[in-house]
Length: 432
Image (tube, rainbow, N blue to C red; front, side, top):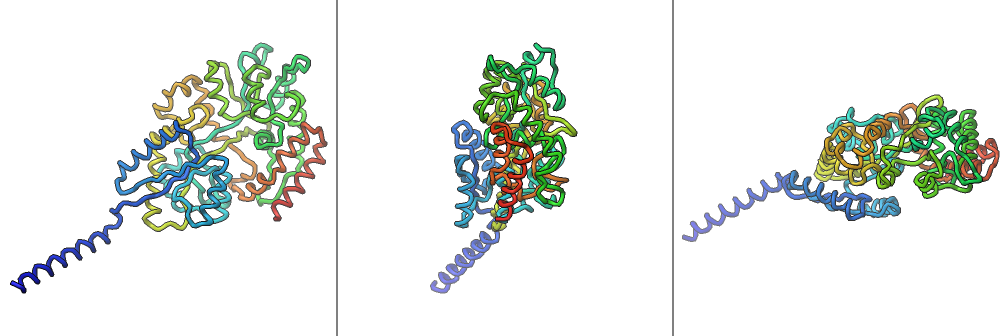
């Protein structure tokens, strides 16, 4: 009886060991949690993301997503803090500029991102959107684009038609309309133009400069700010500022002036569209793009990236989440968290029936498709011949370009002198 009992016990132990070994070998089937850090802290947006996460977890029962919502103004600081502590989340929402910084610090698994983009279908993305997340050597990407916005010249169709104008097609026509509507005595102006020492001034000026073939860097990545083309562009911008509201115009002043009819044109992002929709004026707004030698659209992309240094199982789970989010129906839900403002960067989203039938998107008619397609014409300072130079982030951080615009327009300083000052300031920032 004792021998029989021992034999039975040994068998049980052996079965336990075999089962345990089988469990270890099948570790891929065990539940894993990955963290997803994003900037959507508003309840309405969190509700959308919660549903997406729930859907993903249902399709992938062994993967759990832990969300880390962080306010946008403290997002980059949070990334630095977590990276320093070795606690960087597996999946992070990034803007194209900060993604360059992360790439410089080797915080991005570019191979994982590349695989996710390829599985999603590289040809489905608008070319300009992909260019914004390209690495400096042009061989990889810093994130999988999920949404974006573009900036251009918004115009009131009825107002410009009242003076016999059609959509402005080039610099000269923009200037003509601006001049025709400016009446300082009655506080009416031709265009709401960014002139404050802020990001929107840099972004606005960049569109005109790039449309004239002027960039801050050349194809070798050398500083090229004080060029003839740049001088021409800044001189034009300064002249155009004669027909805008006095003082330093930032986002609030620009949006208000356009919405209350003070101006027939304004430089702003697509985030002006929700306000236009609320006013019931969706069929009376047009979108023009600064054009001189070429067409230039300024835009930004929000992307999802995978952190570097992950163990294989976390990396695979993170890639699965990116692949899931890149599916048109899921990306559509993400974009429609802010309909009109956020724009599709994937053609499959633009074609998606849920996107097209959204009441805000639908109210703008073909303009929505026109705006989405403009991602193909996106250009940016520091993006030259397919090379997305990482030093552009340092140039932007220096604040030299917004200061250049402000001093030239509001300060009425000489173009030549201010370009030289800006170049010196940027050179110093690059050397530090």
